[in-house]
Amino acid sequence: MKANVTLTALFAAALTASLSAATEAEALAGRAIVTKNADTIISVEMVVNGGAGGRGGRSGSSEQKIEVNGTVIAPNGLTVTSLASIDPRVGRGRGSSDNSDSEFKEVKLRLADNTEIAAMVVLKDAELDLAFIAPIAGTGPARTFPFLNLEDAGKPEVLGTYFDMTRLGKSMQRTPVIQTVSVLGLIEHPRRLILTTDQTLGCPVFDIKGKPLGIALVYLSNNTAIQYVVVPAEDIVEMAKQAANVKAVPALPAAPVDVAK
Figure (tube, rainbow, N blue to C red):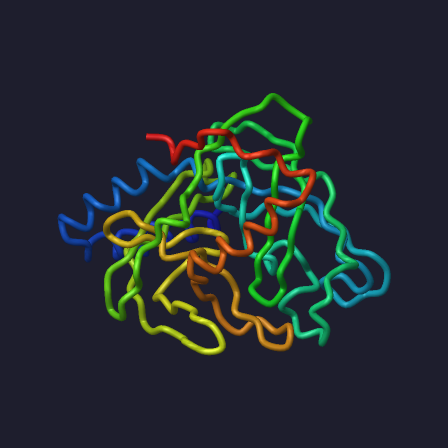
């Protein structure tokens, strides 16, 4: 109990420090971002068999139940998250980035209202640390999901003020939280990556107008996790087009609606 209280106090202190530095305009912008976009950040739950070795390097299979944050990026429920956060074979310096031996079972999306949606991993990109998860077509009533429109993206500027938004875990009632962050630098080659003072895997970073810069993922080199970065929205949009072509993914609604107002 003491450890939990300490961790809670540390989180509260960090959040208070972040908010105390925000100007009135930034605070207003942050609250507007949460109001509009909170339901687009959901929980991705699954059982993962990481194949031979597992996380601990032992022989045989290693199953584990995981829950991570993901961001819904299309009205059919297509969700993006960090591949390294769900696949034990990615980012741990094991030479090959081939993660075909990992098996994802009992995959589901848990929405902001606690609704569970049967889902599947439809596309992985170990180079960009991307995993796309989608509802399984035909397994439930048709619905339109609140989603984040990555095609209307913001522009990162060094030392500009931005917002990292996430959703806490089950023990913290999956509460949506937001904090101000700053862009520290921009990597241009071999592709653009955004470096920020803080970020949460699988979750978006916004500018003050509420436009997303991209999604926080892991920068990988030789299948070794180097640093958390924000992958620009346009790169994720390109990969999402491939994910949308998977047959099991529900068709897009005829007249998609942006995130819930």
